[in-house]
Every structure is written in structure tokens, then in C-alpha cells.
Amino acid sequence: MRNRLKVLRAERDWSQAELGGRLGVSRQAVNAIETGKHDPSLPLAFKIARLFAMPIEEIFFDGESGGGDD
Amino acid sequence: MASREAGMTEHAGPGERAEVARRNRFWLMMSGFMLLGAVIGGTLVAIEKSPSGSLPAIWAIAITVIFVAVLGGGTWYFYRDIDEVERQDNLIAGTIAINFYALVYPAWFFLWKGGLVREPDHETLFVATVIVMSAVYFWKKLRP
Image (cartoon, rainbow over all chains, first blue to last red; front, side, top):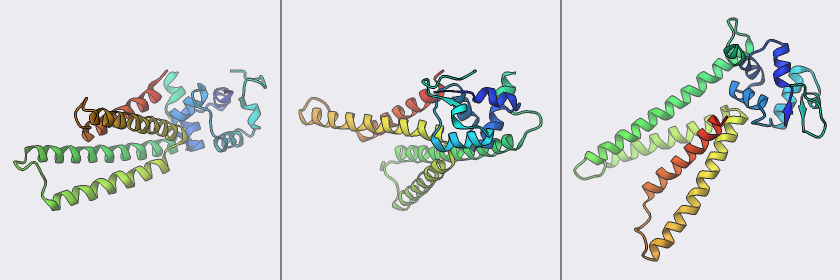
């Protein structure tokens, strides 16, 4: 699953560690999500969406809905 | 840039401070598990060097209590504290390892019963299972 996490993080000038800490996950977890190695659970996806104040579908793309500017 | 991308900034925000605290907890747990490994290793050496090849009963009870308390309690705390990526890597490694054991032990057992190989060695099976689990875990961690 593709996502815009890296772009959204960069817009706020946050490091992976900063984002991880705000989400309650490790820096490695943020990296795994950004690089598509790990698809976040639904609770974590909602947490990410709340943090960036965006709907989930504007952050994550399943390949059928298109999108993704990363 | 790469270090800025991944690591800490000069002025750590609330997220970075939380990440430092999480990482410290993780390494504290790892240190506890490594210390336990050293205690178990030392005990095995002591057994090896002992003329009787055994332990006094009180030592055996003490080492068992320490092992169960530290590994049992530590594993419970570890799984409570880690994030979902770490949990998934551990669960995949554990699942593959238990499947390895469930496959190898019966195969070895039936070959032994058929008189083709020596009796299954539980220490060998235990060590091989731990090696498989570690290999899968580090593959999940280090793959590009």
C-alpha cells in the first residue's frame, strides 16, 4: 500500500523519530510504513489521520483508488 | 540530510523525546535478556565443569525461578511495550520457528523409531529452533 506519509512529515519538518514518538511507535516503524514494508493497522492508520487532520484515504492508497504524490 | 531524515534534531520535539524514552526502555529490556543469557550460560558451564555433571537442588530451583520470572515477565512486558511492526516481526519469527520444530521433531522421531538415526536430541532441537527464530527475525529487520 502506497502512502504520503513522507511528504506530510517533510511538510512539518519532522524527523522519523519525531513522528514515531507522536504516534507511539518506533522510528523504524515509521520508516517501514513510509517505504511500504509495513501496512499500518487500522488503529494506527486512524491515529496517523488524526495527527495530520486528514481522512485516511488522503494519506493511504490501495492501488485502485490512484493518488500518491510521493 | 539522511541523519536529519531518520534521527534526532538538535532541538528535540515531544515526539523525539518520547522516541528516546521508548528506545531506552527497549534496550533496558534487551540488557535484562542478555544478562539472563549470561546467567544461564554460566550455569551451563558450571554444570559442565562439575564432577557429577549436575547442580545442587537449591541452585536448580533458584535458576529455574530466575529464568521463569525474568523470561516470562520480561516477554510479557516486552510484548506490551513494543509497537506493531516489532510485534509482527516477533510473531512471524516465532510462528516460523514453532513450525520448524513441529516439522523437524516428528520427522526425527519417526526416523529414530525406524532405526535410521539416533534418538532426537532436545538440546539440539531447542538451539536449532532458536537459531531459526533469530534468523527470521533479523531477516525481517535487515531486509532492504
